[in-house]
Amino acid sequence: MFNSTERGALAVEKIAQLIDGWGPEIINFTGELIATPSETPTGDERRITELILAQMDRLGLPGAEVACEVPEHPNIIYRLRGKGGGQTLLYVAHTDTKPVGDAKELWATDPFTATIKDGKMYGLGAADMKAAVSAFVYAAAAIRQVEPLAGDLILALVANEEGGGKYGAHYLSTQYGLKADMAVIGEPPGVTKEWEYIHLGCRGVCCFTIKVYGTQIHSSVSDRLNAVNASVKLAGLLARMSRELKLKLHYSPHHLCENGVTVNLGVVLKGGVFFGVNPGYAEFGTDIRTIPGMTREALARDLEAFLDSCRKEDPSLKVKLEFAPPPLDWIAPTEVTEDLPIAGALAKASEQVLGFRPPFGIYPAGTDSPKFQLEAGIPTIPACGAGVISVCHGANEWVGVESIIQASKIYALAAHDVLK
Image (tube, rainbow, N blue to C red; front, top):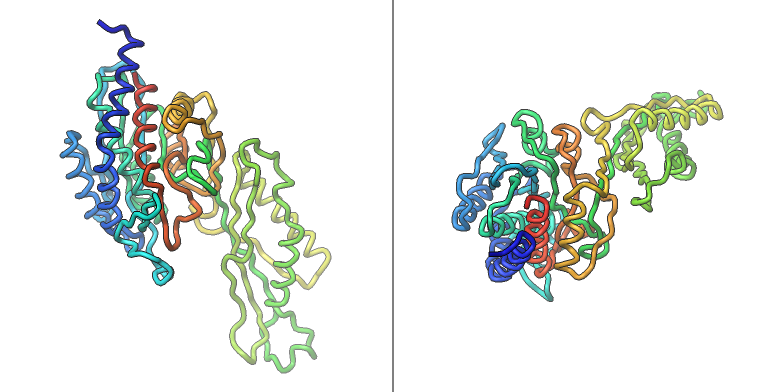
């Protein structure tokens, strides 16, 4: 008879052996996912859902539930039940991708054919995040073949993330009522290299428009009547904001987010009517990537204070701040603490598999974590998995082939550690 420590060691060894043995299957399944278009827009994930469900059945993971608000955006929910008395761990990956879009001619390979070259698998969604879908499925299959654990493992393979998550994470967190004690999203955490971080939080986003008003009259007399050119006023204001709006100086720096706040001015820009007309209106849109600890109210105060100072210096400047319609007006940043059990388990499993522990960080982009953490109350690791975010949403997206196998092992070992 083995004691609990010995049984745990044997289970860890068996998990690693199973996933290593499944290595070619895991890579092939990732390729099949890439070959199954699931772009948002148009946003129809029924084909990829069928593929995933069939593969889960083959792996001995039957009985998954398909939950959806609209048929085009099905979500797969699978619960691997434990013996009882343990916590519930939620693993999340989204099944949709951004479109190929205008980058089609820049792809060196067919974006819908998984192409392996120099240890990397190229294809649309390779990193974002079909590798994670594959890794989670096989991690669950490995867990199922070891002794039953105390807690439950839930897979949520969600739709519509690239479209804002209304029919995916938001639906599951509100109408469906998904519950768990902690969660991990398999987004690619690296920026310059794979396995660069385990992210305990993610930045939020605040989107708004700066509206500038002038005098719309015949352009032939604009100088004689001292007309205000809204486009010129906008240009001056935009240039001044780029020099002087230093929001990161207004907030306490975050020890896991060295780059702090990112201000993206003029992401959209428009103004004027046509030749012959002095512009009476111009506007530019801005998105600000916020860090944990920031609030919409404080940010609004800072922006209005900046605009007030500009108005005082130039009485002819008529400008208005208008936030984007929800949810883009404020998607909150999220963060969990290092003592969340799954955080330590991921670090420990990473060291076992990779030979080192990636440092904790704050994800520069947004994920579905605000929906699970703030709407469903599930503390969520927003990004831990294979790949780098810097190659996503563009041409020649890739993920390391070995990283897919490593991710599956890390997910399985971490789940075993938390749920045993």
